[in-house]
Image (cartoon, rainbow, N blue to C red):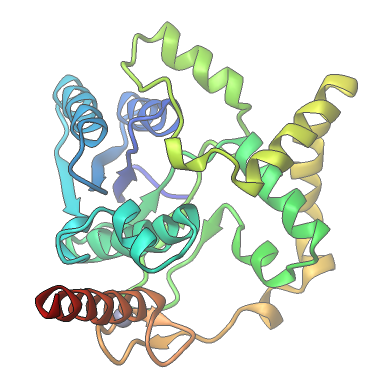
Length: 270
Ligand SMILES: [Zn+2]
């Protein structure tokens, strides 16, 4: 995935997986800094930020901060998603993915790593297989190489670790993570798939790991990675890679801007 010479940026959300990942990489001697994406202004966001800052201090590593509200005309991702009538989770995902990559590219990192665990990845894979989203299946591979000058290499080092083992590790090491999941993820489809694979795991111990290992082993034979990889070019607005003319992040910003302007005109007319 990367070497000890690489400059690594760890996307930290305040949850057990990303906090444990940052801790593990630093303890193993990797050159790993943290990245916090500020998604709003409320108490929960500030509380998360304090927890992450505390870990940065303990690890004696720098923390890169990227403020999403700055790009969303001062709105939180939740408020912006509501105005655009988009599902919060997928909207937040677009914003986070864009800003994580941007922060890594602009600050000269060799790789961006995230704390996705085995349960997360197996649930997503399971859902994508149910719907035969082969494009998503190939793109959710745990290592994505750099394929564009403004696209940093991405890796998920905890992908073979069960969620409950990571939680246990974080607790044993006294890492102060946030116990609750994002309040907006309640009812997300991925949770349904996660419940299903957990039921299977209860019946057949180890099935989640063998399912995921099977994917890593068989993916090239089954999914023909190269043929399915869409060609990337630079977004006409921001220059970051996209498969379309204008990237989804810039399209969101454009729509949001016109919605806000429309609301302001309506307000001034009443
Ligand atoms: Zn763009």
